[in-house]
Length: 275
Image (cartoon, rainbow, N blue to C red; front, side):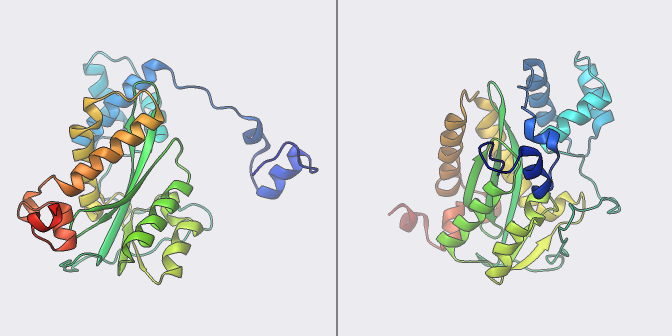
């Protein structure tokens, strides 16, 4: 967006785009190895104790011999895009200009594919650094319809995943997400509105509203991510794609009568899907 060779001065370009001039010249510093190790451990603790906030995580880390303060923990959690999850009053403000939509699934019986899709973002640790993974999931069958890996939390890779899911599978009646700025952005909601898809958003901090995606993250991390140490973003992207293919085609779910997500989504027997 900012072009150094443009006729307009950099300061003028920043003003037109409504961003800080300092942000134009800022160059991100690499995360220290110690912080990366702590972020990996915070991710593991958050997966097991999603209700734990900065103070509790600090205490847990201190008991494990990690010297760290609450503010440092909070900064790392913000970088990772995670927060303590529990039901509380919605006192936070959405991103400027972003509309928050009501939760539409309470009391709704979900009994068929493409009735409800859901999405979320999770933090993926690597050997050196980290990436973010977004997935679009069919709520009924648990099938991952599309996914994207990104080095940043911008909305673009979420929009790409959404557009791919719609392009390959049609469209759902309802699309559910949390209130993250990526999903409340005009770019993301615009794709849903233009396809006449009803938009549903979780209550603030109400992790149970999107519990099936949370379960997907747990499977991915314990069955794939925590068993490896990706050296590059490309390696992470390839390995995650391979795992999600296994998850869809070959991994049976007890909640699906031991069918795979593919079998539940396509309504076929294991033999037919294999064929």
